[in-house]
Image (cartoon, rainbow, N blue to C red):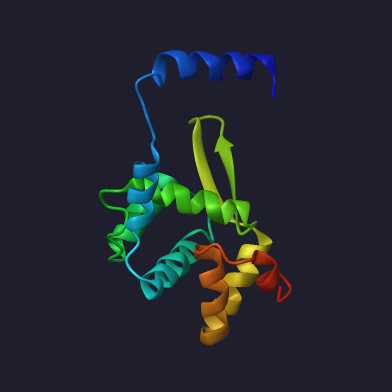
Length: 145
């Protein structure tokens, strides 16, 4: 990390985030917001469909709400947790729009293949989507791509 970014992080930690505490209880609250496995799969599928074109987290949250997904209505943080998880799995990538200083998300080629597979083969895609949501080993599904 560049020195100027290290300094920025240090200043942000000291000034901005000094009063913020994200405890294990907060983490559990975010995780417990998920309803059930079927709903999780549908939410991930909706996110993959919407991220076929780049969108900001704010746009994505509004579009999910328009589709009737109320999971993130009062808990936007869990959407970003899910986006980060999808990004770490190589399904979603993020970048910054320099003019607006806004972060956007979009599918990677792996994400597009997963979405195509999910649209065609419901049963097998269910297993893959479960692996994206839960802590299951990604390598099992990755061999199918």
